[in-house]
Length: 285
Image 1 (cartoon, rainbow, N blue to C red):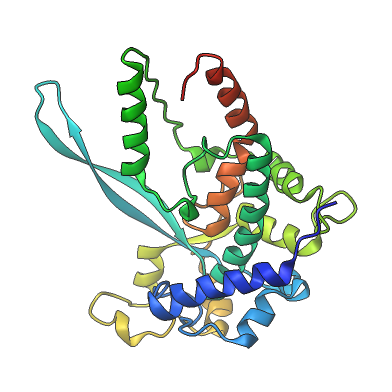
Image 2: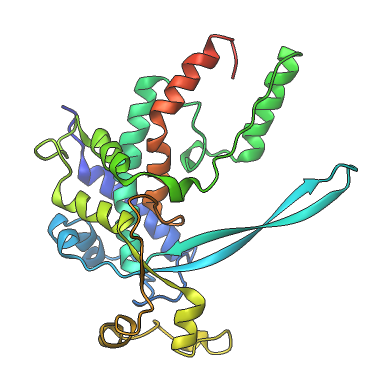
């Protein structure tokens, strides 16, 4: 059994979060709880306490649509811009820390797993520690093509990938990452990991434009709000007026939170291994 040094992981994660929050000024968006500007000992002790996570009430995500501009070329060879709408979910500030911490643990286990399987060079998305971007990966592909001189290039896209992830499979994937470690309990997810799993799958959300309209928030006055509303108003108003929607499907994870990224990679381990072995038979990439 692999013994995971949680304190060492926590120390590494804390440094990354400090840089993200205190130096890079990330996660300054408006939500149901106040923005967190300093990563202190009390916060770290709470987030890393499994009992706190088990008891934690997770706020609904705020759902917004992100417009991504994509450059394409039409049949006449003219370049044009095609906007792509991507639904993004934002976790409340303390919830985001919890998702980030558990994603960090899972990512550590995932990296160990794919190195053991020999597919570390195959999965390239959401792996920032590789310190490369799409330009670097594309260059590797083009260099490979030049050396081969003659080859076939296959491109595929999975439609609505995040929305299609099966919850039962996600749970098994999560368990399989923990299975040979001291983090597994009775061959299943521990109570804290299960709490984060539930918050990532059976989640609630509010649409950003609806909640902002309800509380009279707009671009002119948004800076005067430290949070959308006080907790008592959330209980009395947000919950009672029907602004919260639930993911009642047995599939789908919210795109935009830390655990979704690592789960999307771990979900595809068997696929990556099978394709890697198949392509290796053709001396391919």
